[in-house]
Every structure is written in structure tokens, then in C-alpha cells.
Image 1 (cartoon, rainbow, N blue to C red):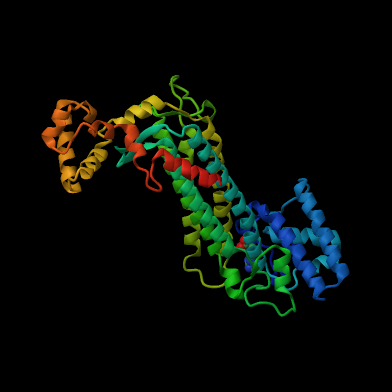
Image 2 (cartoon, protein in one colour; image 1 turned 120 degrees about the vertical axis):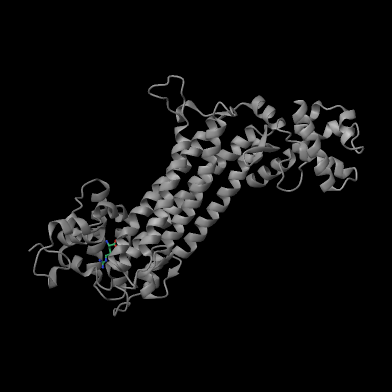
Length: 455
Ligand code: ARG
């Protein structure tokens, strides 16, 4: 019979298909570093607590460090026969150092071990995603600064609404990413406690020191309930929700970049190096990168729903179903990092068609609100002002004119409150710069926010 770490109570070999079906090594090998470092900390603690001897501890540490080196130099064969990363490493350790290796799993179960590994892994990856998000914020601020006073139409319902600064629009994404980073930090806070010591589910009979292991591994503390410790994957779900929200933000940005680079909008040009051509239509330059980012959003939502659904209705504590927790997390980590990176590297190459944006900003009666505000300042109640301007707009549409084409006489047909200075109030620049409220699109406010950001 093949020897497995658990083969004692078995009389038959595992069916070959079942061996492949139940194995997770093909994907959980990604956790090798966390698994080894976790095991070293566990072994040190077992030695300090007198559960194993110091000599055994030292052998285990050396053996594990050797395995780490082997894996990192591609000198390690991961075997499906040993199911997962935990048993692959333990098996090899025993081969390398003999009996001392057989003691490593004292006071531990794969259930608390895997819970530790994922927390540990996610801790590093959350930091990495956070850093990528921050790099994208830097790109947004640079793009805003180099185009600080470019005016574009602001939209509601994808209809021109009011003129805004392009820089202000870019900083809207900065703020979203700021909250995205906050969600990651928040997730990290709850995740960063060590489950080791929970054993299979009930705790352990050995006099271990959970706090010492937690400290050694950089965790803020230890989990409070052994059953919860091995059952919980909500930290992964939180990460996946934070990732989904990041992707939702990126996909909105992606959609705008795709629209803006179409000939219908023609506001921006994406860098050639981030686009591809068509195999049949020679004129084409396709915005593949934003399109893929938009598309990959679906994957990350899928990852979230996959894990939520896996966990739904599972009885406590560990169930093998939970082995399905890793691939969605790995997939989301890779996808979110790539998408944030793609955007932060693409933004500096974007060129703006400023004239076209400015022209569009002034079209569609985009300063109608400013006209209404003007009337309010002259004493007209806002609801009446709204009605008056609405009639002006309808008149313009009928005559094929723009608001600034009207003469003072024409204005005054709609309200006696219009005076000569109305013409100063309905320009695009005036419209933008009169929105000087905190968080408004006035140049002064945008500059102020950039100053705050750059602190
Ligand atoms: N490979 C397993 C997983 O990822 C490790 C935990 C296995 N525990 C068990 N009792 N089968 O979930």
C-alpha cells in the first residue's frame, strides 16, 4: 500500500481518480512559503514549550529551510499523491530529516494550518493590491496635473449636463480608490490574527503558546474560538468583495475610456502600446486593455460568488468543500493586480483632444443651470428660473441656436431679470469656476485637493 500521512486506518489504496479529484496541490502549492514559515514558527514554539527537544526543533528548521530553497530553485517535485501543499512539504521533511520531521505536526491539524496559510498569504497580497491601487492614484494625479484646466462635458444619463474639469473627473477615481484602499485595510485588520492552535477544531491538549507563534509570524493576536478558527473564510470573502468593488470602479473607468476614444466622442487617444489592431480592418485601433479590464470584472465578481456559494450552508467546522476557497482568491489577486497595473501604466500615455472636449463641453445647453442660478441671484425663485431657462432652451432648439447666440432682447422676452451681464455667466469657463464649493469642479478647488493629496 502507498503510504499517506493518514493511511493508518485504511486497508485499500486510494482510487487513482479520487486521488486526483481530491488533490489541491496543483493550486495550493502557491502557499509553500507561508506553509513553511508557519511550520518553522510552530516548531520553534514546540521546542520552547518542551513539547519536542531543541535538537529536533533545529533539525526541523534546517530541513524546512532546505525545502524552501529547493522549491525556490525549482528543485522540488510536487506530488498529487500527497494531496496538498501541507502534506507534500511534511513528507519531504520526513525524507530529509527522518524522525524529527514526524513530530512537526504535533498539536496541529491541516485545518488550522491551512487557515493560517491563507491568512498569511492574503496579508501579503492585500498589501500588494493596496500598493498597486496607490500607484494608479499617482497616475491619476499626474494626469490631472498635466491637464489641470482642460474642460469637458460632465454627464448625467450620458447626456451632457454641466461642464467640468477633466482633472476633476480623474480625481473622482482617485477618491474611489482611496475608499478601496480603506476597505483593504479594514479587511486586513480582521484577518491578521493567528488561528494556529485550533487544531482540527477543538483546540489541542498540548501546552502550546499560541501568542508566541502569532507574534513570530507578525499577527496582531490569536483567534478566540477554535471552531470558528477553522470554519471561517469570511476574511477571504471580504477580500473578494473589496476586490469586486475595485473592479467595479475600474470597469466604469474602462467604459469611459472606451467611449471617449471612439470617433463619436474623440476626446482622448489611448497609447498605441496599449491597443491592438484588427486582422481584417486596417484602420482599426482597438481599446483592448480597458475592454479586458471591464471584462475581467465579471471574473472577480464570479470569484466572490463562487466562495460565497461554497460557504453557504456548510456546517461547522472544516469541510472538504472549503478546499475550493483558494482558486477564487488566487484568481482575484492576480486579476486585480494586473488590472490596476494596466491602468496605472496606460494613463501616462493618454493624449487629450482638448479643443474637441471644450467644444463638447459648451454644447447641449450645458450652462443652462448657470443661467437659472443667474436669475436666482437677480431675485427670481429657483423654480421660476428653471421654467424660464427651460423655455429659452426650447426656443434655441426651435431656432437651431445656442444659448450664447441669443441677443439680450431675446433673453428679455423670457424674463426682465436678464441683463447685459448674462453673457458672462453662460460661458464654459465661468460655469466651471463658479463651482467653488468644497469638492466642486472650480479650478481653485481641484488645485486645493491636489495640494491636500500631495500633502
Ligand atoms: N487541502 C486542504 C484544504 O485546502 C487542507 C485541509 C485539509 N483538512 C482535512 N481535514 N482534509 O482545505
